[in-house]
Amino acid sequence: MAKLIISCAVTGSAHVPTMSDALPVTPQEIADQAIDAAKAGAAILHLHARVPEDGRPTGDPEVYARFLPVIRQATDAVVNITTGGAATMPVSERLAAAKRFAPEMCSLNMGSLNFAFFPAARRITKWKHGWEEAYVVESDDYIFRNTFRDIAYILENLADAGTRFEHECYDVGHLYNLAHFVDRGLVKPPFFVQMIFGILGGIGPDLQNLVFMKETADRLFGRDSFQWSVLAAGRHQMPFLTQAALLGGHVRVGLEDSLFIERGVLASSNAQQVEKIVRILREMGHEPASPAEAREILGLKGGDRVAF
Figure 1 (spheres, rainbow, N blue to C red):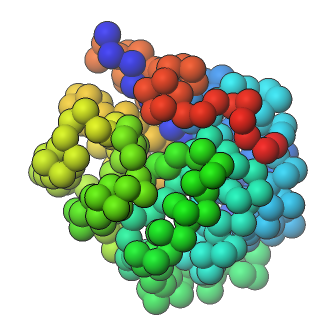
Figure 2 (figure 1 turned 30 degrees about the vertical axis):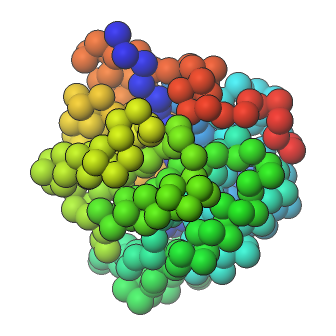
């Protein structure tokens, strides 16, 4: 019975509060939903921060400081802080919280891409906050910048902290970018590859693409050098993760990636999505990895060596 790691991406930066009342915004909401997701079976909590008053994405470490210690005190889950932040942030802002808190894990986008979610605006007639409409509509002009220099900057700034990465690969070329940094010695095995499907601007959510991404990673890295996980955006989340688990991949759920629990039904919480993927995995004969097992699988430094 293989143990598979469940990651939960709690709030993200693409969805806005108007899209779902369940989306956590305040530090207390983020902490509560993260803790509940861990109790439901998530071994890794992937975390962004938002301005408490209106839900705008922020990289401000002072906001992170209001929920990171709460989560650490309540759960043994691995804390994974974003270095992606939002497409509208410079890399210095995106890295600020990770530098201050030295978590066990950080996400790291392995290349630049068009990162678009503007079609969602067609379904909204009334917005909760003044910033939201322009933020969503103008995403047709967003480039999520992650140059080779940006990636090296993030890797080098966190090297002394012992932080390892969720290497986010939105397309096949991002796997080759990762191979470049492996060759340079800036990324060392065992590393964690998060394959991302269904973002407008990235690779599409087709089964053939999943197989091709996994086969490409095997060729580039060798099967024993890395662990791999899959996330899929929106309605593709649960069906695609089921396919990934059938192939032996780890999985990521959460309201960052999809606001829904089934077709046309908004999820009530992150924990609800975790509970659903736990049921699916168990039906296939898998068990969710505990935080301790996830640390062993991924070679993490341990929760006692973070700065929060």
